[in-house]
Length: 93
Image (cartoon, rainbow, N blue to C red; front, side):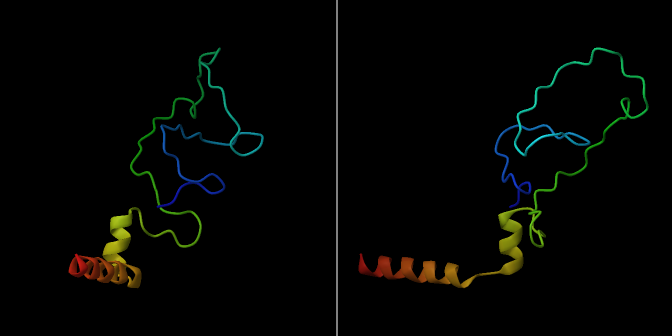
């Protein structure tokens, strides 16, 4: 239910970077260990991750999961049509 703008769904492990990375979208990035010991306050910042937002960044993006969307929206017309078709197939068999 979402993904990143201009990229899409991320299906594998990923790393989120703080700040910016120069170059085109989807550029491969090589990570390496730092050569110098980091002493600045931002480098020693402790990160506490509370939530990874998986809602869509396009449009309204209010649902985190498909189940949450179905619970809110209720039965849709296409779902009712599928159920009716399944019932007709059962009657024919």
